[in-house]
Image (cartoon, one colour):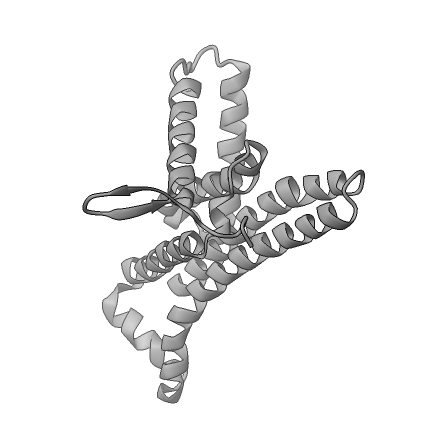
Length: 219
């Protein structure tokens, strides 16, 4: 339980207490920005290096993947989805490897990400079909289902939030139990699974569901 508590690192006069999940998020943001600057400062069209080719291949794969879900006409949303994917991948894998507590073990972080995704999902539907169509779709196919359709606005971010938080919490609990009862060999491959594979899997699932909900909203 001590490991699950989100401690306050320091306090600001106006903002108040700053939790460790926020501090780790700031560190991840700084690292991602710094890497972006370093890896893209010597880009070349005529003579691309291995790093540039690897970056282009990765970005190309991500763009093709998301375009296959939300369509080419909605590619303006892909940078956000890739950014969230990178953040979650770093938060779920690099943070524990570096000795930090993953921010996704904090329900406030997963809730904030889910709310951001909810806003993007609804905005994408309004931008493509207009406000009138967006309001009317709540009463389709019959007006009696309108309350249920409105409830989906709350259910979608709640499911994204609790799925990400619950999986990260469950992985942590299982790993800690194994470390307690079988402290030598078994936790090594299990730790690799929960700290690396499962962390990347949850990042993938989060952005995949966000893109899928966007597609449903834009139809």
